[in-house]
Length: 344
Ligand code: AQP
Image 1 (tube, rainbow, N blue to C red):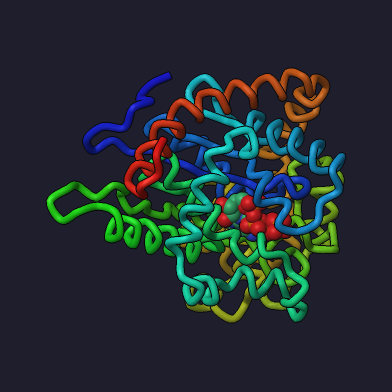
Image 2 (image 1 turned 60 degrees about the vertical axis):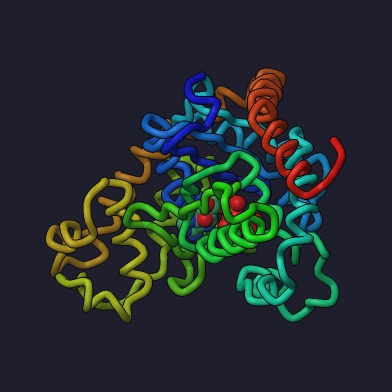
């Protein structure tokens, strides 16, 4: 395990994913694919954030099986558990403890601006849980507990990272004196690749999401070749041929989405993909996208199925990861408690 202690200019990554159902192409391209690339250069901590998952009601047995599935998906996608840390959040109690302290730093006005709460609570705000409202504070705790410097996420999480920076900065002002080095470095979001926000296959203006009622709206990492193929064939499009410039994609959300997915899966810029398909119809483009999606996702889903045959082994991996995570978290939280004025 390299680099457990953070010294000098060292970078450290934290990122998480909720066990709220099967992972989809958005989670893969927006987050996990980038994690796999980054783990070779930067010491990384990845968490299956089950404490976040229960901010909306979860069926307990389903939560357990989703946690196994997400762990299997992350490992099958290429996260190396000897190089990086992988654990489920509730095994490291310091996350909840720090969240409480940060609840006493974060201002209600800051939380009131969070768009994800507005979207998830919908019209029935009074009925949303306090946990859903405070979700971004727990997320700030997740990141800051490891003194993380970088947080690779999809574009939808940018506002939450900005809030984590505000909370860290406020904590520094409250508890670090002028002649001391700031306790927290302000974490930076890393929003990488051409598919920063993968959209629904049924509606190019809506984010691809696990909780969308329509399974046809997303490609799950567990989908078979046939399912991937059918979903892409049925994906919403428009009647025009594919354009040659980014400008012309502006009012064509479905075309933009499918081309961005192709570009991210093939590790090419969107400009290059536009050059390749300019003037062609969707009937020409979609089979190419199907081939590429199947080629990338099929090995992942096969490996996932293999890993899921032994869930005891997955539990062992997560517990071992949690132990390593606590080696970092415990002393950081002790320092924080000390700064706040707790006897510990
Ligand atoms: N559509 C997306 N495009 C790009 N990135 C995405 N991410 C999620 N959806 C997209 C990124 O995946 C990581 C894990 O997300 P999450 O599961 O913790 O939560 P989420 O953003 O709320 O994802 P969902 O699918 O929309 O879940 P539900 O439906 O349960 O709320 C994050 O880095 C996120 O940016």
